[in-house]
Length: 616
Ligand code: AGP
Image (cartoon, rainbow, N blue to C red; front, side, top):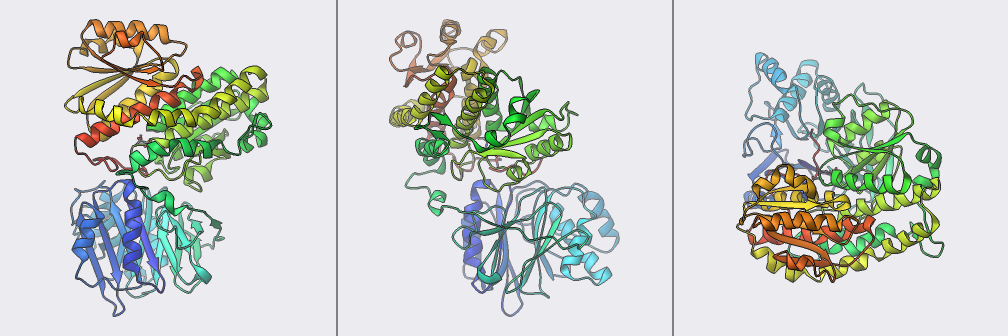
C-alpha cells in the first residue's frame, strides 16, 4: 500500500525522505515521488515509475535542497502506475503539493464539480481531486492551509492519510488521517518533525511518536508545538508514545531477501514471543490480557475470529486450539465478509482480531463493528501501537519484530504461538485442560524454537528440491486437522511469490472434485506428519499416487511408510498434535521461497501485492 514520509526541521530533508521511502518499500508500491521546498521558495518535484532507486536516479543532478519535504510510494488504485499519476501532486496554482494514502470514494463527483469551477486535472487520481478541492476551498474562503484541509475533508467520503505543503508557509506540513495510518515523530524540543505511514522511517531519529486518530488534522511546524484538531477545529490533546524500534531488525542481516531472513528469524522471535509469558520456574503461562479479562474470557458465549490472508489461516488453527483446550465454540470469518454480513455479534461475545500489520482496513472495520455491537475485542497483533491494537479492548502482541517481506512467515508462526498460549491459559482458568496435559503442552511449546532450527538446517535440501518444480503451472496442497490450515498457507505462499497457481484443500475433500486435476504433471504436497489423522492422510496419498500425481510429503522424522509412496519427503521433528502447524509450515515457506528465487522473481515485493492492505 502507499507509503508517506515527510520532514520539517533544520536538516536537509531529501536524504531523510529517501531513506524513509526505502524503509516503507516492504508495503509494496509501483511508483515513487518526492517534493522539496528549497530555501528560495522553489517547489521541486521528482517522480519515477518502479523502485525508489529509479527516483533517486531521476533526482540526481537536480536541486534536492530544502529542509521541508514530503515523499510517497504509490500503490495504484485510481489510474495506471505511471509518472503522471505518481505522487506528490501539485495544485492548479502551483502553491500546494500533497501525498495521499487511501481512496476517495466520491472523487468522480467532486472532479465534475471542480471542473465546472474551472479546475482541470493532470492525472487520473483521486488524490489530485482532493488537492484541488483543498485549493478551491482555500481560494474561495481565503482560509489558511489547515482550515482549507479541514473544510475539504468534510466533503470527502473514503479513507485518507495526507500530508500537504503550502509554498506560503514554508516550514509547515499539514497532515490528516481517516482509516489510513499516519504517525508523527517529534524531535527534541519540537525542533523537527518526521511524518510517516508507520514508525519505521522515524526509527533512529526519535522514539517519541504521535499516532493521529481518525478525522484529526495536525499542523506540523518546525520549532513549534504540534497542534492537533478535529475536523471542526476543536483542539485535541496530543498523546505522545515512546516507541522502541530496533534498527537492526529493519536490515536483511546478511540474507539475500527479507523473506529468507524472516524465515530464519523464527526460532529467535518465537523465543521472544514466549519469553516472560511462559514461566518455566512456575510452570505457568501468564498473559496479562487473560489475567485482566479472565471473567469475560471464560464466561464468553462464544468466540469469533476476524482476519485476512495468512492471519485468517492462523485463525483457523486458533479455532481448533481454543475448541480443544477451552471447549468454547469459535467461528472464523474473513474480516472483509464479516463487516458486510450484518453479523450476529454482541455483548458476551469475544472477537479476536488477528493481524500482523494492525492496519488491515477490513480487519479494522470488523473490529469497529464488533465494538459498536457490544462485543469485547481482543487483538492479536504484531505492529505495536497500530490501529487495530489501539482499537482493541485488550490483546496480546505477538512480538516477532517488523515483518518486511510481503509474504508473511514469522508473523504466522508468532500468531499460532500466541493462540496456543492463549488456548492453554484460558483452558486452565476454565478448568477444561487438566494439569498433566497442560504441563506436557507447555514443555512441547518450549521446544518449538529448537525444532524449527533443525528444519532450517534442511534449507539446501529444500532448495535443491525446489529446482525440480520451477516449471510447474499448478500445485495442490493437502492436509487434515491442524495441518489443513497449513495446506492453505503453503498454497498462498507459493502463489503470492512464485505466481504458480496453487490450491489448498482438506485432503479428504479432494475426492469430491479436485482429484480430477491429478495427473503426472500435478505436484501434490501432503502434510503427513505424525498427528491424529496420520492414518487417514495415508489413504488420501495412495489415491493421488494411484493417479500418477507427483507426491511431495512433509513427514515426521523416521517415517518409512510415506517414503514408499511419495516421490520426495522432507522430514520435520515430532511434536504434539496441537503444535504440528509450527513445524510443518517451515518447509513450505522455504519451498515457496526457493521456487520464486529460481524463477528470478522479486520475492520481497511480489507484483500487485502490498504488505499492509489499508484499503478495502
Ligand atoms: C500473507 O503472506 C499476505 N501477504 C496477506 O495475506 C496478509 O496476511 C493479509 O493481507 C493480512 O495482513 P495482516 O496480518 O497485516 O492483517
